[in-house]
Image 1 (cartoon, each protein chain N blue to C red):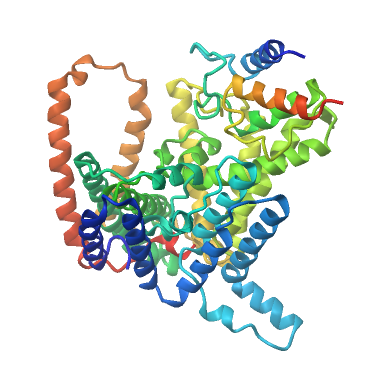
Image 2: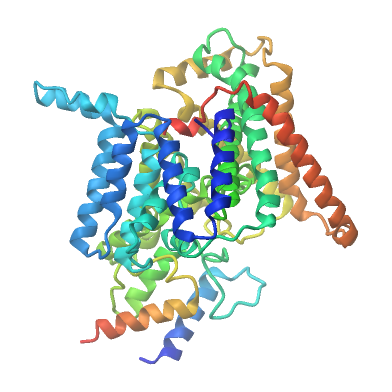
Amino acid sequence: MNRPDVSATIFKYVTEQYLQDCTDAVTCDTPLISGGYVDSFSMVALKMFLDKTYAITIPNEIATAEAFDSVNRITDLVMATLHEQAP
Amino acid sequence: MLFHEPQFLVFLAGVCLLWLLVHRVNFLSKALLLAASGVFYATFGSRNCILLLLAGARTHRPRVRLLVATVAVLCNLAILCCFKYHDLVSKAAAALAPWHPSFLDWLLPVGMSFYILQSIAYIVDVYRTTCRACRNPLDVALLICFFPKLVLGPLVRPAEFLAQLASRRPLLLAHLADALPLFAMGLFKKVCLADTLATFVNPVFARPQGHSAADGALCLLAYSFQIYYDFSGCIDMVRAVALLLGYTLPPNFNAPYCATSVTDFWRRWHITLSLWLRDYLFLPLAFRLSALWQRPCYLGIRADSIVYSCAALVTMLVCGIWHGAGLTFAIWGAYHGAWLVIERFVYPRSTRPNYRLSLPVALLRWCCTFLVITAGWLVFRAASLNDIGLFAAMFRNLNGPLSMPQPCVLIVLGSVAWTLARLILPYLPAIPVLRAPILQFLLGIARGAGALLLLIFALVFACNATTPFIYFQF
């Protein structure tokens, strides 16, 4: 699984689920939580989506609000977990 | 010695003068601030310092592994529970054993709820590696004990505050220019607004019998604004004092009564506690639950909604209990948790932070939210369930006279009008002339003059100030 694919999947999920009504130009570096696009409920749903989509369990201690603050950071998190939990 | 008392101003002047002498050497300025924090805390009773020192000692750990972090967090929580809920602990101990833990009765440290949470934040962040383990005990001690934020917060993000401690704080006139209006505003909110409202609210809550429904309604409104002015005034003063010494503390309020949902309210009220609860309780709990419930739906309800609901309810219950051991606090927390869950199901999209409502919908939602929050304050303020019943009985006396003094009526009406204005203002078209540099300059001068007037006015009131902050009891 390569990074651009993971990033594209996460970006698609985030825009479809949380940014339907958003008129701002959102990029992979846009702060999602501190920018007010994603709230704590969305974070829970997003982590459940990531765990299920990539068949991983992102460790709770690294799944912080800061780590979920942009698509790029979430991608880093997923890639690191994929690397850690690779069979 | 609290921030609005004349003694504190003398103390602050002394600290600022000494700080001016030593601020070029970071180590000396931090040592001075730690000593000042000790003196400040000792004014609440020297015995309190023992526990504060213990909290600092427990927190200073250069390396944190899971077991160490767990033990350290549990120790902090155990101490908080023992001292905060000493009534319950004493009763339970008396029921279980013939001896009575009398030490719990005399050691009730001021500000413990805040510095324990601050300690936990540091330990967990170091464990999560979101904060570098600090090897300088002076820095860790100041993170916990920095006197402006010691007794009433705001809770800071350890990494951000430690980064400020790492370098020498500059002596800037801009800090003074920002700090003075902030301090003036805080003092004004506390001694002129909150304390004036208290003159009406406290007697009505103490003896609700004989008051009319109008008194009851206005008393609740008055308490809503009293607690806001009291706490936000205190935080303004705290931030101003920290700014005078070169440190920036996070804001704790963002026009909370402009909220258009309870979810929105918790993004605006006691922001640093909300963030603490999110980061150290809600998210870990929700993630733990999500690992347990793997199916997409349960009884036709999405699993993520169930996870959110359970975690939100528990978090708000803990938030309520954190405020005090009484049943009323637990009910208040559960009440807010229930509203968060209801809003998630009723309007899931529009509770998101950036969602822009139309003005009529925003006004309608604001009205409902304000009523919900205000009703919640009745449970929060009442000493017991019986008191809630006595207060509610006031609403049967529909024809009774209004006994609220005129200054209180003016403050309440003015506050409602100001809240509405702040809600509506973003919907009005921008007027370019207001952004003209000359107008901005004149506004700056008017702001400075206004702050000076507020400060003088508030200082006159402060000379007789004896009312402690409401959050002081928590």
